[in-house]
Amino acid sequence: MSSERIYLSPPAMSAADLSALTEAFQSNWIAPVGPALDAFEAEICRRTGARHAVGLSSGTAALHLALLEVGVKPGDTVFCSTLSFAASANAICYCGAKPVFIDSERESWNMDPAVLEQALRAAAERGKLPAAVEVVQAYGQCADMEAIEALCAQYGVPLVEDAAEALGASYRGRSAGTFGAAGVFSFNGNKLITTSGGGMLVTEDSELARRVRYLSTQAREPGREYVHHEVGYNYRLSNLLAAVGHSQLLQLDEKIARRREIFAGYVEALSDLPGVSFMPEAAHGMCTRWLTSLLVDKDKSGVDRDAVLDALEADNIEARPLWRPLHTQPCFADCEVFSTGVADALFAQGVSLPSSGNLTEAQQARVVAAIRGVFR
Ligand SMILES: *Cc1c(COP(=O)(O)O)cnc(C)c1O
Image 1 (cartoon, rainbow, N blue to C red):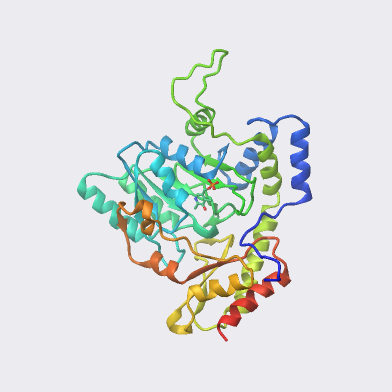
Image 2 (cartoon, helix red, strand yellow):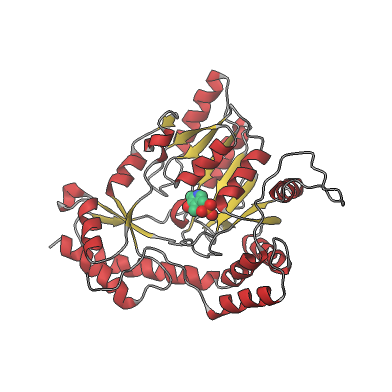
């Protein structure tokens, strides 16, 4: 392999990000808390319209605290989208609860409200409702939130939004993350904006925000004696990383525009191939196109997902299948699932392509050529 490796979604960092980091460093606000963290939280509120934001060490930590604060306890169940990264369900397990997986709809690839309804009805009949519903906004797109919110309200079950992949996405004009009791963003290395590692919890509930701040700093009471009434966590976001996040966040619109442009480029260059289709943008909202994902229908094309992945790898290009549905993960084999086969079918056919804001035209052309080569 002679050509330079093309990665799936490497960070896109700017000179402004570096200055922000240097400035925070020189100010000696190194430890968690500091002016950059305050500014990052304020900017997340401004961007999303959320009332409160709490910077945390990861999206997973944010999910963990969100679930604890809506009352998830050992022995509970939590309904969770099955088409997601393991972190969505891991956070449920940290609470001592068990995930129950809910299948996707074709329109958004996210939680199917009809399946959620069926699962809630079955749970009510059994007399054991879930302690929460955790809806995942996968690949930069919102689920059908009005339908899901209405069902949660009808059954009196709190809603938590895993919007780790969906910062900047919207549903009927409302920002991802602002539905339900709490929403969560991730700033991991391959997300739309990154702090290298970090997360944020947003909520309308001032008491929930206060509790999350408290739990994330070891549940330490104010005062000189370090009194603790509860066991807390070391989950606060570092001020240095918040400086990077704040700077990145100021470029969010350009980053989304670039990802959408990359998506449009792939659509233009590949749509004529037999059996190839792209992740739909549901009529209810705006998808950030965090990753460009396509489906390859073997019956129509004679080409399967793995042939595409193999061809890309052979040209030193990183691509991935979609998320393996969580109900098929060995570590969740004993968890219940409400399946219609949609997530399984998406996984069998889906490929995510290099989508970084840094992707050059020449690199994108290489990805396109490698894929077209499989269909020749
Ligand atoms: C990235 C991701 C997470 C976890 O976020 P971290 O910041 O890596 O802990 C959770 N859920 C989904 C859907 C993700 O993609």
